[in-house]
Amino acid sequence: MIKTIPIVFLVYLVMVSCKPVKPEFNRITLTHKYYEALNKSDFPKVRPLFFDSVRVRDGDYSISYSIQDYKNWFQWDSVLRPSYEILEIKENKESVDSESRRLTTGNTTKVLRKHA
Image (cartoon, rainbow, N blue to C red; front, side, top):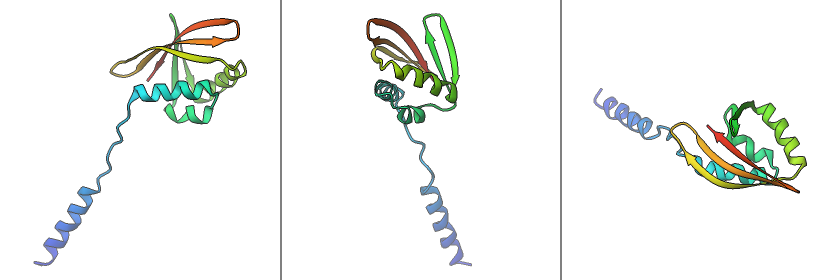
């Protein structure tokens, strides 16, 4: 019995010390990674940055995409080979708002993207 207590205590210490650590992530850095992948038309690098949906806001217009719908949009957008320039990034409690400018041949569109 006396030997059992230290062994149980040791097992307890090992289990507590092996508790998984929640990874810290910086949403601003993720937003920069998103635009880098978007500019390279690299969907496999964009996909892990989202959970199950994406909200995009352009001025007063806002839309939520499922990952599949966003992939379809991404494929069509990639055909034009635009580049996006980040104008401003603001982090809120639950989301990141980024204002960007879409540059394509002959036109410029200002887009406000909101990422959860």
